[in-house]
Image 1 (cartoon, rainbow, N blue to C red):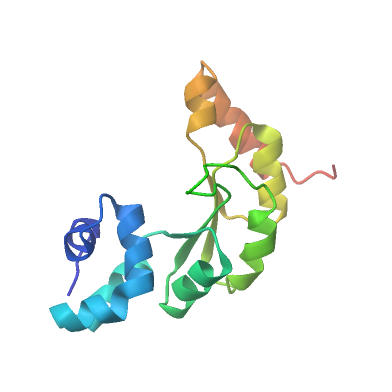
Image 2 (image 1 turned 90 degrees about the vertical axis):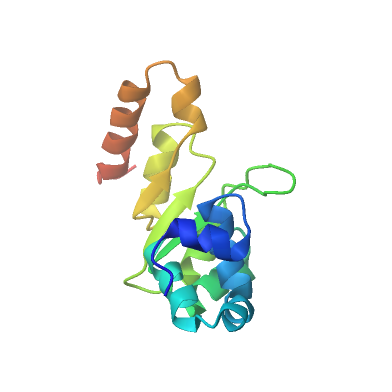
Length: 151
């Protein structure tokens, strides 16, 4: 049985855990038959964030039993950000599955918007790196995401 992300990367031949998660969702049954490890392919989908940018990817993640689903607002081919992606795709993720809003979080207002739309977490990188004071930026994002006052 697959025990961790490193094994998922090895099984799929992908460059990182995110790509491996997508490959397992798309090709898990086929890969598992080759490796005779259906339970392992599905288990890894349940223990790592499985990302998606399109309806079919989110549906596959849910069908595979993923417990953590990342909805990525970045088109991975064009690198364009589509802020409506989370609100459009997150309803496909059933209750009890962790929803992560990925990409396009440029500041506290974005974190608050995703939180209001039901995101359990946001994946932030670029805005913290470019902002200068990453610690202050992270505190501002957390405060905005936890602020439940009307906007």
